[in-house]
Length: 87
Image (cartoon, helix red, strand yellow):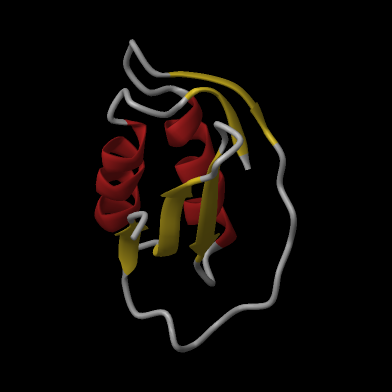
């Protein structure tokens, strides 16, 4: 979960670009409380670490104040990274 100025500023698109360039699979989506949820996975721990560093250092007007990481199980069914939009 990412907090800060992360909605309405192109943050999800930036995360998508970083993830696809890095070979990370998963998704990014806005939450109703103003945070952004990112599910990112890779077997390569270094790639994940670099991904987290990159998503913290996005260009203004986006701003990341905090990232809360939670480890979850790896899903083989995720083949790419996608932006989940509200329906």
